[in-house]
Image (cartoon, rainbow, N blue to C red):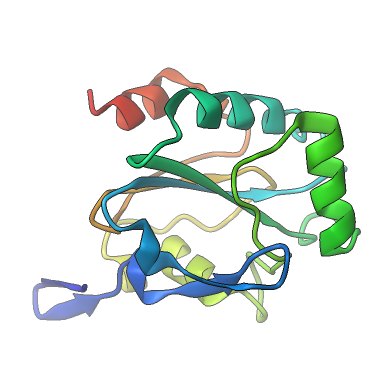
Length: 169
């Protein structure tokens, strides 16, 4: 469940939970054995069209070994003002999103969700500091629940680096 490095104990993805966009509890431990791409999303951002590439990636690779999890957030210029219901409808109608979406959260600041505290702080994840700089920042999590890397917001979800990670190359 945890990794010990230099006597430091680090959490992993399976130590966290969140609420789905429908308000149901979601325990990340159910993702054991899968690579997980976690993305903070927004409906009114210049990068919102990334939903299309994320969905294509999910349709191509999503199975028992890979999943995408979207976390709507209103932290950047209030570009995700809607309710969870409005966000779900927007994503479904405009981009055909079928990958799991969680309830809207904060990905920075004093209200930052604990999962994002873990992913963005080397002191917590043991790998890297990666504060969220904008909507559509992507975090790559291994099959063992360890943070592997981060792709900045403008990097396409289907970039060579992300594809190589998914394919294990």
